[in-house]
Length: 49
Image (cartoon, rainbow, N blue to C red; front, top):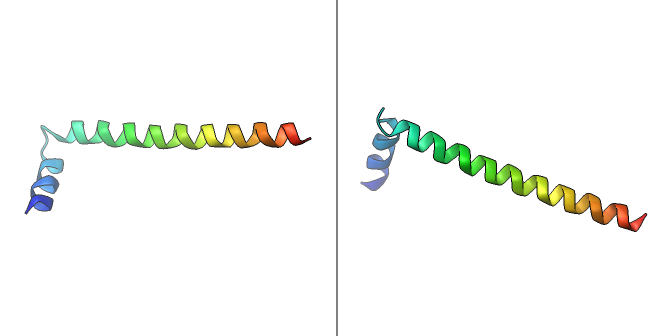
């Protein structure tokens, strides 16, 4: 079904770059969010001192 078609599209050399860029963008957003949370937590800890 749809899963098989999506997996086939991900392996297609014409579309592979698109899916790779999309995955890297998602990873960057996740990393930026994590960095932002760590920075906010550190600021809170610094204010307590």
